[in-house]
Amino acid sequence: MKKRCRFCLGILGCIFIFLAGSWAQEKFNLGADLFNQNHLEEGLKRYAPTRMQWLARELNGRNVYSGERALRLLSYEVSYSAVDDYIKARVYYKQGAEYERVKSAIQVVRKHVSNRAEYYQWDSWVKVRLEFLKLSNMISDEMLKDADPEFVLKAEAAIQVADIEPTEIYEWKGRGEPKLIKSD
Image 1 (cartoon, rainbow, N blue to C red):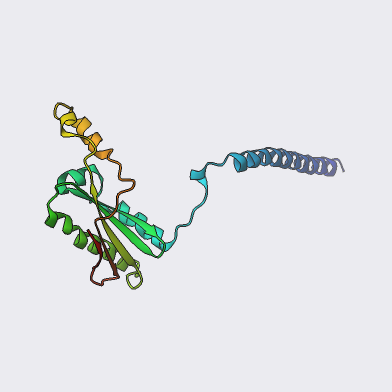
Image 2: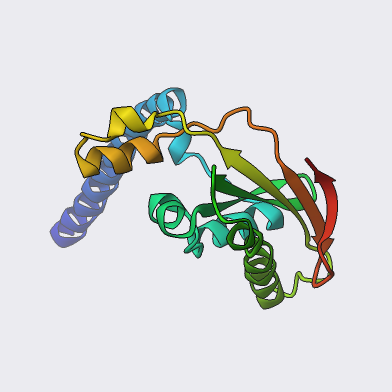
């Protein structure tokens, strides 16, 4: 009988500890959940991109034709974004860049997009719009002639391209040929 009582008391004790622990955990988690819901940062929210957004992000991630180095070496850089039902590729080029070199970006973008779209078997419906945008020199050569080379690189990278009108626009679908839509 004594063994049975001790056993029952032991079980009741375990149940009590379990319930008390559960209550405490629920109380503290509830407070944390309320805090998190009210103070959850945008960067921590779940996000599921569309196929176009996914493709644009992947193209930018694999893009070797972007950044200040590409702009300095090739005289142009490429960036991708998803807009409605097409991929928008923007080619930013320096004022005074060689025309043929900048025009070679059409085939670069075409190959880059078609390879990634083909990998996912999306090449039958992916549409591409390619825009050429000329960067104006916002920093005069006089300002840069005695400047530190590292400053020059940072200054060139800081060129803002907010409201530039495209000089040329091409469009195509899948592996189709690029068609000139607009030209200055």
